[in-house]
Image (tube, rainbow, N blue to C red; front, top):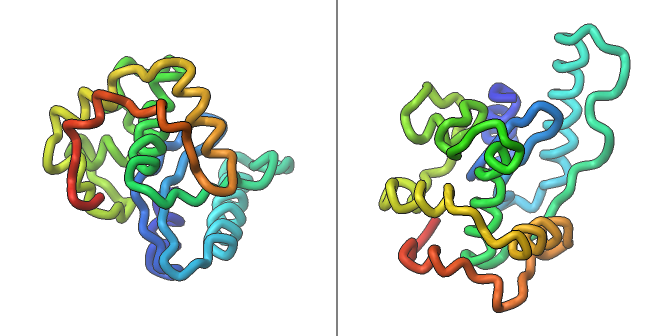
Length: 176
């Protein structure tokens, strides 16, 4: 996964913001300035599928379906997706805190291991590390979490105005 993420960053010009590898799926938060998401994901999923099939000496397909894509065009929405991605191992009960999960770009960004995935500079995390980790580790309201998951399956990410995490207001930054 790391090699292929490095490849798509350099070959397709994508911006990688967050990646979390789970046992049966992954979450990838990227930007595609060249509007080439289909080509990027065809390459990424095809190559990682071949590598995983070979490494596991398997004959069955690796991925059970197409990836889900969603356009996130507002910083507020990006923050919801960012939190959703990094909280996945916590929701799954694998770790108690987001920074404990070693198959996440967050683990590397925090300096807990060498990060091979070329992630964009994370201004939110760098500028206010402790506050950001506290925010990431705070549980959203269950209704909000299911609303966010549902929004990620839409063509364009949108949320009702009342789904604003109040704990997020102190994390204002000029750019992500």
